[in-house]
Length: 200
Image (cartoon, rainbow, N blue to C red; front, top):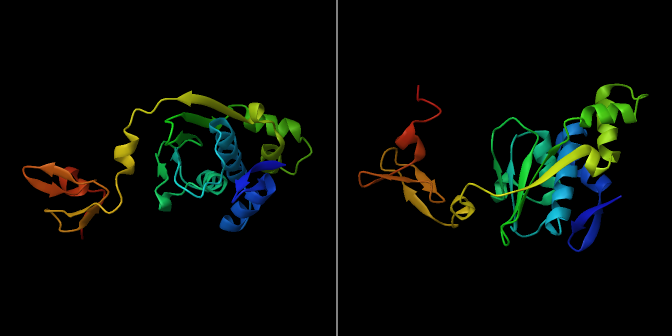
């Protein structure tokens, strides 16, 4: 099954799934969902994926296996600053073409699990039915895709590479214009608004 492009050559769904399995030592249903979501987004946006540039930006609404599936299929990674984790606890993602501003949010159909089990009633378990069914169900049975408009400033989020200041509170470096100016000082978000940790 053809799924996407890589360096000008077609990449199959099976190729993407093998890459995912190598990341996790095995393949799981959520990795398959992530790959299928990314492949569908590439088609909807008309982009050749996985990308070698940084044209596609992804807001991923959970971490873990599904996020890795999306990354493998799209080439958008947290480490490349082309994916942002929004911790909503949802297997869902919004895919944004940074050149056109077009965006699609994709998530599993609410009946995806039941449809996979119905497709493969002889499977060893529901997990195995989902693993195999998610690979073969048509997009419209597996996924929901909706065009959306961002409510955040993507340019400000991406920022400009190389911007750095020292926090006047803790003395640590703050990158990507994440500092907060308060009373004439540059503060990191932790010093300005409170940290998620405390020193012991």
